[in-house]
Length: 172
Image (cartoon, rainbow, N blue to C red; front, side, top):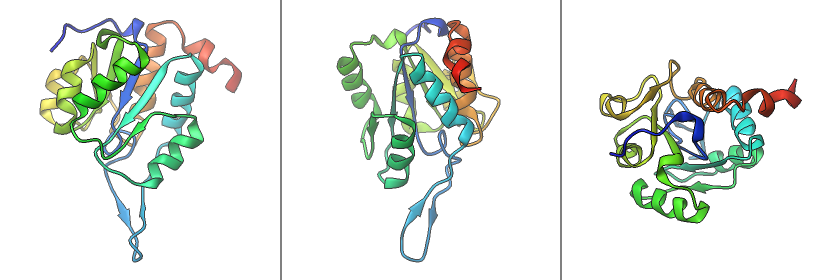
């Protein structure tokens, strides 16, 4: 694991989906259609992150259109679903964006996120993350995944860099 970077110089934020952007629950109806519940405050924070001219990507081991539709509505272009090992996906994203791992934060909740969290400069955990994730995280949300943890993480990062007020000033 790398030495933790300062939260005030993060340029790329990586999010897991299930258990981070959602509470981890998956709803499947009688027709087999899968739906998920997202937190509107997380969405606001994602837009603020993009307003601050920072990069964001969602890496998830599952596919599905519910997440793609939600991210499209927020302006998030980088979704890597059914990704396989997240560390390899992260390596590719770092090259794509030309961002060093030290200037990258990742927010995770469960064991598939562990290699990715160990690689980034600023690993973060949702409140209900597994003990292994919490052990490597340099910052812990007080909110569970799907219940505002993404908002809390983004607000923390943008306030650390002095960019929160500017990123949200036009939304009131």
